[in-house]
Length: 310
Ligand code: SF4
Ligand code: SF4
Image 1: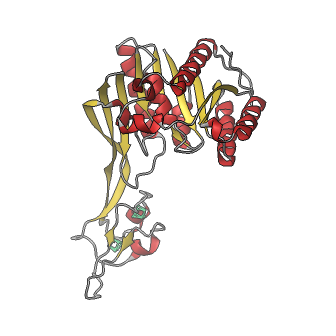
Image 2: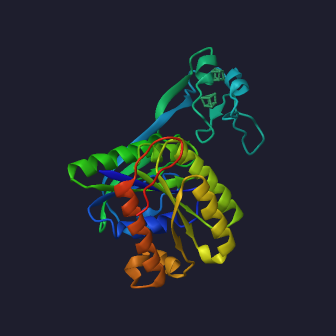
């Protein structure tokens, strides 16, 4: 079983549109949307949810009013300003404080400081994990709750579930739509993958983001390819990014033009390849052939990235 993860230094580079198009060519596969902060692969794959699990990411504090004496120690010591005395419309302040669960970071300081043990600390729902059926294969996706921290735990659960399905259903490929950036969620989605594809745009920030992503995949010895999306809006910058990529041991695997067909496909809730033959479709197919070649030949080792080009 092989895993390819599609990442980008920042959001909005076209990562998900490309992942959906790859899914249309991948064959027997499992799809995993690891961008749990802003999952959107489901928007173009029309999934039918067949399982939904609650994700408990940590615990939150809550005050038992009946035990609280209103001493205010917890208010004083909460560094996240999650505990306050509610103030009525009349301007009167309540006798006992309340915890705002959105601001509570679960540090537990208030629990330790409360002299009368009036603060409970219970596991709290942080999100949901879904297993779905799509026309292009099973998909595992998730949704992190509002203001919940994404430490990578939920990403790991998504990947583990995708692997379990792939093993059960004898799928040889897992295509992962990774989160943007270079933080914990990205690390959780690339570790142990066979290949990473960095999708970037020909802008200064795209150039910088590609560098950061390439450094991250190099650190974890993940063979890496790069693709410049909307390359024709700045051919000069595309050249620069591809040169920089080569300097990092990352192989430029393809260029994808700017095309409104991508937006049309999104509006139609499908992938670009399902919109008929098109020049951009041919470019995506060529990119996928390159990825398949690299997946079959990729090997890790050493500080540099050594991806066998197709
Ligand atoms: S657990 Fe920490 S963040 Fe949450 S209310 Fe208590 S002191 Fe504040
Ligand atoms: S420290 Fe305990 S008793 Fe004091 S205000 Fe907070 S919850 Fe109430």
